[in-house]
Image 1 (tube, rainbow, N blue to C red):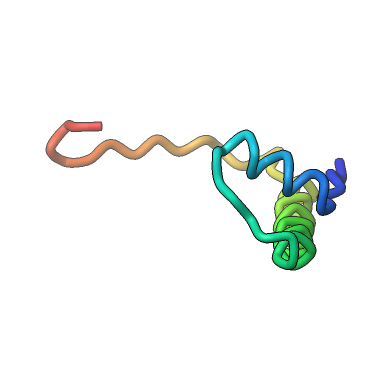
Image 2: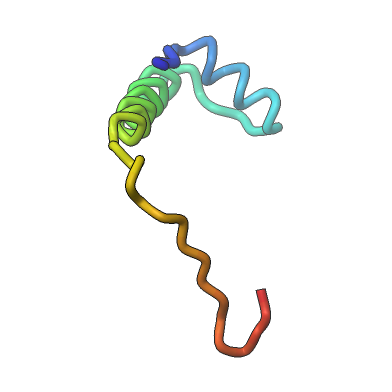
Length: 63
């Protein structure tokens, strides 16, 4: 599933996070988010049908 990330999306995310992003930075950040989302989408293409879940606990028993 592709999630388009544009200037408006970045602006809204910044507003929700309570951070200020200069107008001249919105496009660059949108491009970076879009690239990140494309890479994350590639993970959905992996065939994990025969992969067993792994749980690792620290030796000291603390999570």
